Length: 141
Image (cartoon, rainbow, N blue to C red; front, side, top):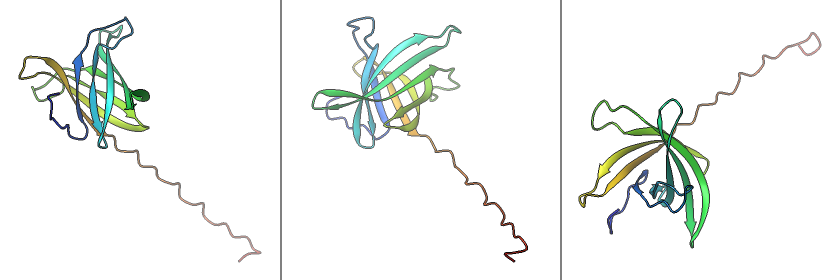
């Protein structure tokens, strides 16, 4: 991202990076979550059925020490319009679930990148079971 650019919460970007080894990520970048910059590594994979998948690992960086805080994946999808994401999926960061979308983009400087948008998933509403009806015996009225 350009110097001076401040990402909005839930947004970020991934840029292709040079692979140092076979296990190195294909992409690296950042995502803003709750006002904190989260580092991301992304790996391109192809499933046996031909689906193109982007596997994600999320890390915090405190004083140069990277700590894993989440994972996720996105699958390439067919776009109905240019506004639809190129990839959609889900991830968990710090124990919170997010739906995530990604769009292939090109910067003003001509550099390819992937724009990200993450939104917290709505927790499933848990409904407590109804209390058992009181059963009265002849002795308690």
